[in-house]
Image (tube, rainbow, N blue to C red; front, top):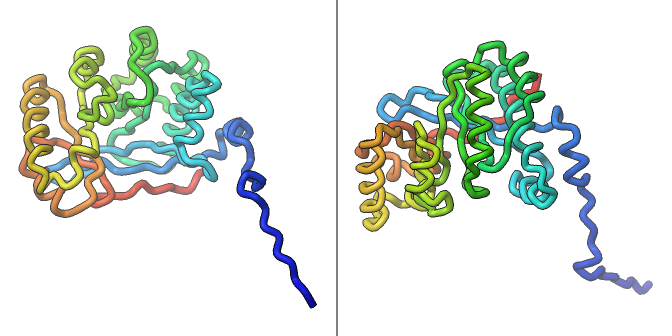
Length: 251
């Protein structure tokens, strides 16, 4: 008996996953992972960063698709409402870090839903983390400030990926006047042996601590990096060495 093997060309193989827009049209089914942020000197939990997990897609695949559609506002609304919802339902302690696109805003209708959901439970516990994905936008940020002042949340502002150049660094600091700055992973990796990065980190620490900005070292993956950073004026730490993102059961 003769067998024939038919091999389909690569471009013939179809993606059988549900379309991204269809997946995101049911945001109540989207999970969030929560990665802990620690106080550097005491190892106490400072809070958690909410990270969208739109299985079977990666977060960047979803962001890229909705950016093409000019609908990043919708992703921000999902993150704000369902990130807060799952954070509270799982009774996580400390502050909630919510990722925010510089040019995106949440509708007033969603903010009302969030206020009804939260009922004051996040007062002085909310950190709006400005991502590097798009350039900062004065109109969008001004509206966010007004909305959260109206909500009386008492939120703080954090800048993500500082030192990567993507957030235009000092210009970004002057614009947002953040409470917290997250040092980019490119500066943290092998910091214990990378002399150039040590020098850059020292400069950043010197400038930002004078501005009373708290520094958060992210993406710490080894004991050596952790031990070195504990000797620096770093207030907060985050990374796989300290604690991985965890998906809790949705209630």
